[in-house]
Image (cartoon, rainbow over all chains, first blue to last red; front, side, top):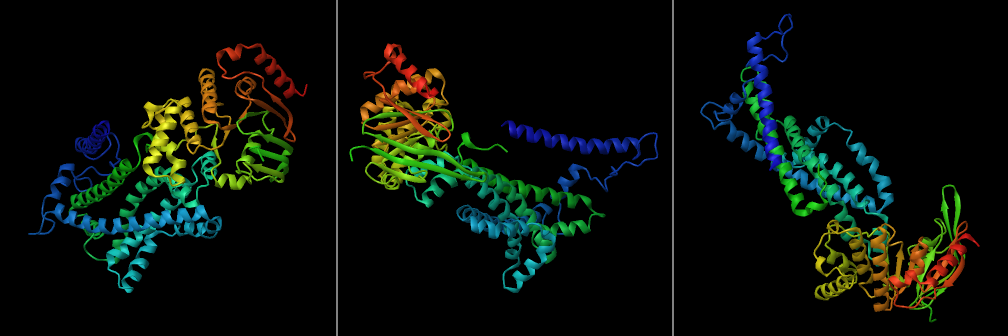
Length: 280
Length: 254
């Protein structure tokens, strides 16, 4: 409850700062008093549209005679979320599998971990077109190619945190399992995996947003027109004539991200009892 | 045969980056069924190492070690012993009873039987009302009782304890000692108990094995001549004090 109140409070504060700056700008004529220095960013409606104009833009038709912007953006969000969620699930499973493989075989860890780390140094902007184009050549629908970008961004934090989490049980707990002559799979599922869950969920929350950002970026170069990436690109080009649309689209994109993180958090609450949850 | 633990000239050397460390040298020790043996000595004397050798959590470098008439490895595979550490080491995603059920689960004991046995064990350690409590809701002493219940869930003939009360306050510690003695008498378990508290060793044990360090070795093995059941009066008994002094002197090397 406190969280909801503080969330709304901070949201209102941000709106107040935005609008306050605009009011100040109007009162001062866009210049800091006593100087020739222009206020940056310019507090006019062109650069900083009113918050209510952004919200209003959501309910106006995106194109003449078309659906409202919000419904167009929701359709686009659903399209992008489909890629992001698919990539997230594959990346999560892949990361978990790698973590388990690494903890069970030091040789696997030594052989593959450097490549896993190195893979993350490639900027996705560079990787996205390659993956999407190759996916297309393999006959995958482009949204699946985009999902691969999300996979790429998800598997790394999950693999690293899974590895850490699987190694987190105290030494005596491992000795205890050995004293009961537990098989390695029993130790894995009854000790290491439960101990790793808080670590894994921390990674999943990071990955949830990353997978959406990845999907949006993946959509940019592929140039197909159904996801949020295309919508952002389009409103970006129209920014000078109609800035509130871009702000509105950014708003919806971040709401989509929040929605996804909230889903993961909900899953975390269901899986891990309150007493051992890591607050973050 | 007959003895539950028989060690002959057992040694343990740890290889570290800085060379070899001789943790135990030429350990000769036999323990008969039903004994309560404390291993006491300064830190670094290898008492925990000896306990882990018996439990096959470590392997001797040299010497012969027989546990329950078998190799330590076979004893472990046969679930011949339970173990309790200084930290209760409860799995915090499991309730008290689920923690006690763990060894039974790993032995593929059926669900109903598991519940019944675990309930019985928790009642024995007087935690009958806390079966469904989460570990973090229990005090340190209560957590340690759950750990003891877990260690005894499979009715092992041997119980290995590594400073199980070391982290408890003095009051809790004394009442836990009292309870452990009751459990020992009720269950016919042989107990090997590592401690660095002289009064604890004397109060609990039928025999105190005194160790010294560098290299870790046994310097004395002293029977404790105090009658059972032991209680508050025991701690005020004159023989209790005499034994304390004897152990202290043995620790000092006289």
